[in-house]
Image (cartoon, rainbow over all chains, first blue to last red; front, side, top):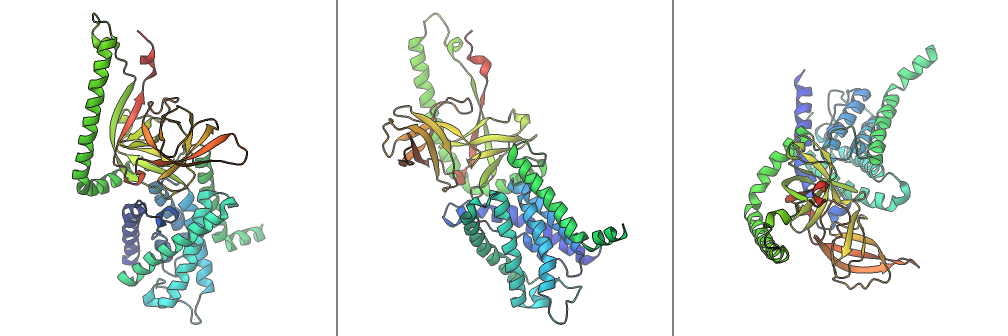
Length: 174
Length: 270
């Protein structure tokens, strides 16, 4: 195991801890916003995987991380469903957003390697897919499409703030 | 055959994605169908221990508040016990010792909430008691100012409970003043309100009426204060009122809770 994968694993564990111990608790304050939204930082684990990682691994990692989050949120399968899809969409998004010169394969999609605008575009589309599918699977019917969209929007904004805050604060290189 | 193989290799990422999505959806559906999921919940040791550690750290801030609230409850309970014993003594013939006349169908186990949620569609919370302490699925969980939920998954040391803020929760509740009863449900309105449905139209309801548990199911004892009526209405030509009940307990701040164990056999007179 080389240092890069070790770095990714340690970061994943720290982000998972932050998610279930801190961000989940924030939802417990009763002000109006939290009734509709949640804050998801953990998709960043999948989004920050290096460019060169194979799509199969990314999808598998997404599924496993989703199951771990499910265990702590008592929402069996819902997070796993959303994150697996996000991991698959990551491959499509990367292909779609590929710059003319191609990617530097040993790097990760960070501000350091791709610039702020690119990272924001990549993150906002990934999180949109993630939150929309999360609330769709949670409510499990399109009858409440209004509610799904409202929750998606609020969660997307909150998560976006946290994920970009993470990028700007820690400025991860790999 | 060669073509098929090539197809599988070409689209293997997509096929893997489909496979895992189907697995995830199966988990979701299975879980929604019945609460007996095969998967580890937060009643498992790993997540339970982690939550317990985090909760211990946060507990410290609230010690004073908790102590005050517990002292207040103790005082109330003492008052109740003394009054009950006094009234029993009057009712019971003097030659029989008091103890033999007391029924004790309810047992109370105290527990600590170590993880909680209010903003999901189906909320759960985790308590630091499991089958080692005599917790069983289906027991009621009450909190100092009302009701909190019903025990669902039981682990060795930790259990998860369905919060009252869960679309699956149905609690039999009554208006204290005139004993009309209905079922109390949560429709994702907000964490401070629940709906009491199926109250017949002839019932006399006022805003501010007290809602208590009805005692028709053995999950909760009769007469636990749940909340007060905020407003009420009928839908169309329905013969039933729907009441919006403001919960007395702030579910977001659940901390100490009590698990109610009901043992049926002691109901039969000796």
